[in-house]
Image 1 (spheres, rainbow, N blue to C red):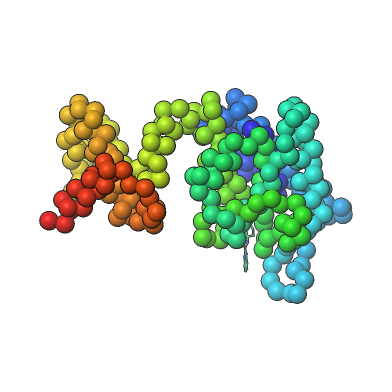
Image 2 (image 1 turned 120 degrees about the horizontal axis):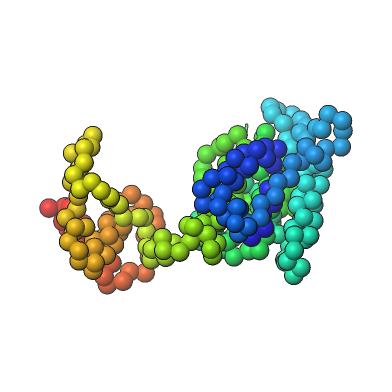
Amino acid sequence: MWCGVVTLFPDMFRAAADAGVLGRAIGTGLVDLQLFNPRSFAADRHRTVDDRPYGGGPGMVMMVEPLLEAIDAAREASRSSGAEQMAEPRVIYLSPQGDPLTQAKVEALAELPALILLAGRYEGVDERVLDSAVDEELSIGDYVLSGGELPALVVLDAVARLLPGSLGNSASALEESHLDGLLDYPHYTRPEICRSGKGESSLPPVLLSGDHEAVRLWRRQQALLRTWLRRPDMLVGREWSEEDRRLLEEALGASSH
Ligand code: 9WO
């Protein structure tokens, strides 16, 4: 996947590109990450990229021209990066006003050949940039940060681990799709007995039983119970299998008496 990022803070991406699954995806060429700083496209000798908001009020707004120039440069770079038949990159702006980012959305993004992520700063970008050059606005959650860079990295990380050939892809990704729309079950590793601040330091015995089917059922039941208790919204409209219904009813029955 080709990915251009338009940002006033390219160093934040250079740091992340050195580590972890995303770093590996970039290192192996699975992700071609290119950075475009609007400041390089500023028209004046002070390299100005922000200006005061029309209508007054506090803060500054990112100016149209340096952003459109940077987005155009990214489009041009994606064109010249091989893949002749490559479709136009999808341009995504990260903001609290965007559609919520979900795993389903991440999976759809991972299918695309090219993305341009636009990370805003200050009080945001001139709305006319969004109207003319942005295809989609995404939010990673209901909070305000100081810029769109961390959300852009969140999108990159979530997408990179799904790309075929990525370290995050493969076994654990399969296991995860297997937990279709549920929270994860609890994990344990050695030692069998450990010190712990709280009381719950014992291991669920089924995990030592060697009975793979019993382990599978226990994990599924834990995933269902946790989702029910912590995120009931995720179960609204769910198509229930007979097995899942039984496992959850059993768990809820066990906890209520
Ligand atoms: C700043 C501000 C100051 C006074 C009154 C209202 C205000 N809104 C903002 C604001 O939203 N600033 C944003 C900072 C502008 C776009 C980049 N910034 C950003 C992106 N903060 N948080 C995000 C973000 C993106 C995606 N998902 C969650 C948060």
